[in-house]
Image (cartoon, rainbow over all chains, first blue to last red):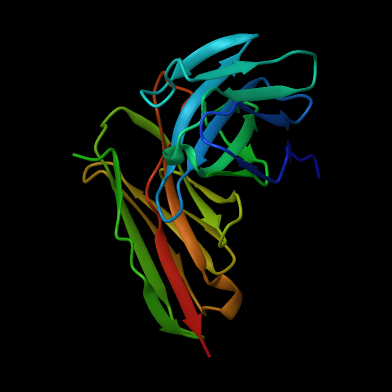
Length: 117
Length: 110
């Protein structure tokens, strides 16, 4: 079964450092997403990406964050100058819109746990 | 008002019990609905889509009530392996951004 892969599975970083989280979406999917989940809290939308550009972003996704699709397979999330409150699980997801219903089913990667010290 | 609301639980039930969760959504333009399952420290995984006429998948039944803006998930004959958090997910018309509820925790005990 096709899957979304994410690396690293866990990253520990010092406050103020930059981190890059990597994702390989499912190859025939068109929409890519980053969500985050702070421990014990809900899954929160960060940004979506379609046709090589950001299609939507949330209030959380400020200038500290950026996304890139540097080649045909990878999809990255960069967090500049990390803060303690950036500690969370970051999930990448991709989707193939089901045209008949418009339903948008996401397949998630296993996540990258970021710990900021 | 939160977009997607769920009772966080936990729902603590014995094996074999029937348990039901509800989820309410605030956006009347919501178009598609899903239940995802999330195990502790794992990624969300699609459990089932929710269709207007209601749908069943084995022990799981999902229903949609557009008038009252809620969806439900019924689990029959609960198994220990059903212990997880169940996430209600809603897509609004014209948006490709699924919105997640906080999830309802289910604990099935022997």
